[in-house]
Image (cartoon, rainbow, N blue to C red; front, side, top):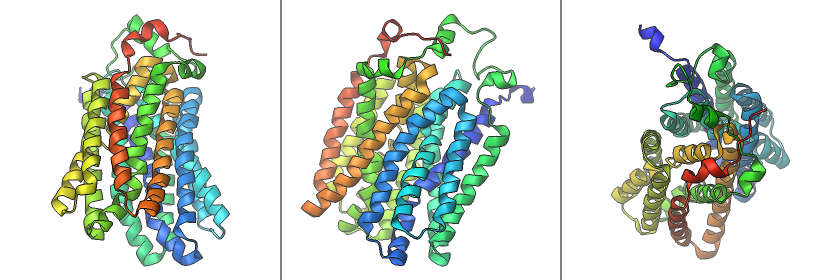
Length: 417
């Protein structure tokens, strides 16, 4: 009886989690390799960071590319394509000699590959395989980002310190190839491929559920819809206040406030650990409560924590910031993906959430550059963190203005091809 209750959706979830974990370990690699590249090639930090900035943009662009691929050819081939691009890029980087190779391979090829193997594909998998627990599964995929960083960043640091940056790069190359194996063997595009129903689906599908599965909003129509821009605008602010600003500049800011590298790194590790808890909790909550109000709460708490950051000079308060901020680092992902599906239809989730994700990474790229520029001009990051707090409160307003209740009348229903 126990075996009969097991659903293959959990196999697909596990395979997708491993793929996203491997891709996230690659995304975390620049912080490990910047100094060794400076030492070996004599390149300054600014021109190496430019490759990282390019990669953030192409990572975001990989979202809609991956989402479109998932909608057309399924998540299995999309994930294999993304992991394949990552592996090829990492392998070619082992022979790095010139700066243009870094821009092309890390900035473009690996950037797009990690964008395809990202939360956009994960959100589509969750909505295809689950009638219930969708938010929780999306939260689990969001947590894969932190798990990948917590596992691989210390490992890469140790290997790079003892054997050089190429050995550290080989580590994530092997992880990317290894993650592709279960995708190839066990991943399936949809429950019908194995003669099953989505988890939580009854013997019959209601007309409402069937319509939700088939409802598709063309990109051109979505671009004329206010709610698309509210979601994209709030997610732009999410990227600005997370990956771009805190992810790039928190450690140097903390060290300028007198904290040691060990204390700063410990705070970042604590933040990552709390992110796993917060993202899973957010997924659970998004299955039960108004996703707009959840988004507003997340952005509001984030704004408050960022407003306090410039005034923190003691270790216990830095750790308190790490806990509060870490709880909603990626907590915005499950409600944003769910709202996109509710408003525009599940059949177009991959493509439209992909473009909303691209907006997120544009915000991240802007903050990464603006933080460095502001620091050069002002000598600190204080104004940037205050600006992020203000933008967080703007995101609260944007989230509360989203109106999914009107969707059945206004979003065109187009049958899938």
